[in-house]
Length: 503
Image (cartoon, rainbow, N blue to C red; front, side, top):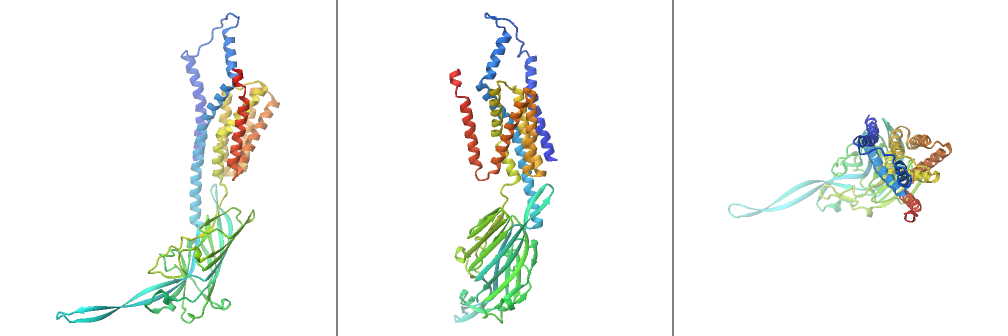
């Protein structure tokens, strides 16, 4: 509805601009500012009307006048062009709002933190106090305090294999790119030397240990397997996960597996494995928790954008998807393998890596780029008509130039309206075809020559093909646009090379 109202507004604006011009001419004539010429003759026998017509023809044939007219019309046509750009911005904001809503229901951008092994222990600290009684006698009193601490241990080896399957979710006119991720996580923990964390350890609570794994959006979890844990992974015991990480200040969202390590505290390494399936959108990230973290991400999405503090060691990208591999040592981050949560604080989110499900150029970005070339396209079209006029020695009226400019302005609104329903290519083809047919038929009514009208249609088609080619060039768009400007400048220099001689 908003687009319809805005379209109607632009059409009324275009009609208003044309009406203002005709009304100004009518009022000027009525006020006597424009008076009919008296058909008198001069000494050479030439009538006033003939003199007037000769001067008008001379002015109309002047390249300076034609270029001035083109500049004026291009400036006026930027008014409806700016209105179309505002509509595109509004639709783009609405589009991203819908994408955000879809992400909230399907799954947000996911980041994997962990796994980490948590082992509680108790510090016993004895202090000696000297007390003096009322008679001045001193005595020493021992006071013992017990403090609960939690040691966090990171994996020695961590291997993460991720399969990202791209999916599309539609809401109204908009499609959102989301993914379903299958994660296979394996690795091992070495026996932690917790005694080096404190010289006052009274007891290590191996029976209250737990393994925690963080994931950004837990509501998007589809499935999590048992935790396979043990020295021999083939005969590992299976432990069920429970909600929450139990260390929300360090890892806010996720789940944990409680375990009793009393019987196996000296049986290291602790090998583990688990699988999980989650939904997500926008991107997938991970933190390098292992002493060596090896991550492989495979996806059928052909436009990855690798992000984070560490880029992949190797990557392969094709139209069928991509494969990326990271191997990250613990020296690339700023937190250790073992520390005490209660007394040391580290930002485990500072060193993350991953990939964005990047859409190379969105629909509204393409349309915005097309509008950015609007003024250039107006100039190209008018110069094309000007060259054509010079070749056939016939001039179009200023009103006809204005109508052609209004038709060109409608191209962008037609492109926006159709692209939301049929995609950019089909919309561009439809909008360009409509405008080429309209302008060609209008030109035929002015020059009454089918061969010449066909030439105009071919020239306009070439301009639209050239504009589409520039829009498709992502990395070299600036270079292509610059070359077009140089070409226009060269044509204008060639056309104006004899102005000084003629004067």
